Length: 280
Length: 357
Image (tube, rainbow over all chains, first blue to last red; front, side):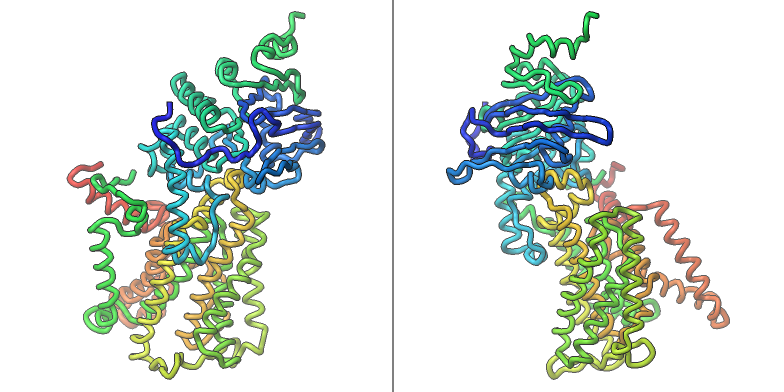
């Protein structure tokens, strides 16, 4: 339950719920002789919590890195569908640099927390607003005027995220000194501050205890159900995945071996074999 | 762990974002302002044994350079060993505009800032590919190239490798020669130094400064949230060099000459040392570091001459190096985070008092 009305939209994708948001088609990624991904294709729809699962080394993180531009696949296309001012369009992410992809609203968290360790929670979240801010050196040096106005305007957005993720107590603490679970939450918050059109979460619950996992799952659900943000999530905890996701893609050895709703996936023989092994 | 000041609450972003937020901070600022206003009379009066006005003037100049370098090294995490070279560019640019083109000094100083910033952005390009020590070596190239050009281009030189600048005229007013001149220069340099420090402090609390720190702490994550890492690094080099250009221009006007010999590699390393001793990633630290690194050698010399008398004159430079080197080593061992951290700890001590933590 949300306790107060929020002023800002978190979701910046104009795509209608249920329409295709992300099309991954024929993506192959090689590191030298190792094939991390071979011919991976799946479709993600607006409004979904779309999980990518698979055993260790299946290529889940590589997949996410391809979407956010950190890796460049040798083959295939990754198309992000957008609606701007009523106009439907799509952008191929494969040729773009990470910061350009972030500008399209593709936000992400990392498996190993990648926060700006010397900065406070507030500064980390303000950095999430980077793509919405102007960066003028002289205005910054003067401070009074445009730079300060901009700072306060975006501070209001950040305060909503702080409120949503219950980070009030840690606002001014340097993130390096915070507990692991809180750091994960801050990283999630930083991604939210981008106003994502697509939110990529790489194991947001890894290394957490049951209570922290529940909190995090609740935050992800809030952001998805109440604020309409589409989430592409990688997670190892099957019970969490089965509970919160609306669609699952299963990878094994860089190939898609299953794709469907949680119930379909739970009965998929290939998936069961990949996780539990063969009888023979 | 720093003490957080309990009981200080804010009801507006405006109040929270202010640089001075408590009465104690305002009082300290007033004390500093009073000290700076009284400094010329102190330096000619009761403190003339210890402080000389021309040393203080030079500190004001190097403070500007150190603030610039701390933005690059401390805030953006890009090491540069070419800062002296950029001061040299600023000095000669100001000299050329003032002496060769006969333009007013402010125009020359402004041109020095802009040109040095542009050159800094250019020489910062290796930072897009190189990190850490490798970048430091690459920036040596800028140092070497600049000093080479400055020493070979004879159009720049009046005698030897030196360009002479006539006394500063602004409008109808001419700065006096030594004595009264130092005193007049003090006010001019103080204005420049205060504005530079303030501009630096403002920059690092604005969105530009935050993107610099993002690049320093985690460049991959910075790219993933939309920071154009390339642009941030080049901007940081430009800003840092702009400060160096200003410092170099003032240096040339103040000393009445510009010569590459002043801005050799040793100068660049001295600036890096200022930033480290003062405290990486702190504008105030750059000020402390600059003052420390510039004044302590002078004080050591004075002390040694007092102890040894005039027959020590030939030994003093060597002894000074030994003492100064030892001091820096002790610093790095006992407080690697610099003078700024010592100041923070002192403040914490009084905030916690009578408890230890």
